Image 1: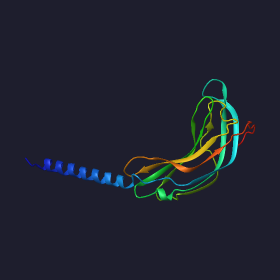
Image 2: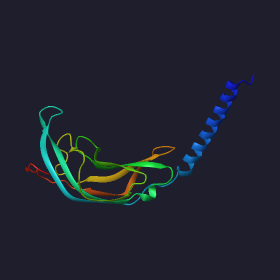
Image 3: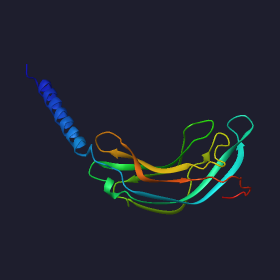
Image 4: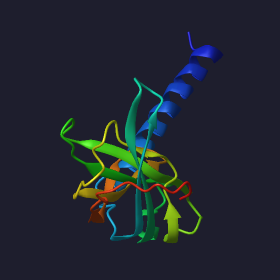
Length: 180
């Protein structure tokens, strides 16, 4: 009745149970930690163009360019249960067509052991800042926010919003220059 296979099965099941309890213990030690840190975002340049939109009918859409400075010390977020951070800068604004628009402008993956003090100057948007119409021109309340996903060794993936944002107005006229 107690063959080698049944003993191996019992040992394997017990080992998995112990590993599950240890993993839950690892998760619970950092589950309720506050992972917000102060963030300083400054915008140095805003440029707005009206360009052809090739995704739909022959219309023109707003394309925004933002140059920003970003300062944040993310070192307190890292503990033994954090593998990496996925950091992204997003813009939120309202238009007549949509009550909430969210666009990711820049992102970065920060691994454990890398320098977690961000001191970025004159950064340009990594992704296009398109609006699906003309909702950027003369928009007075476009809010830039730095957020991050914490990727743990064990546990849930919390989405954290930094404690600092900046609201900026977009210009009332379009630029005609070819370069940014």
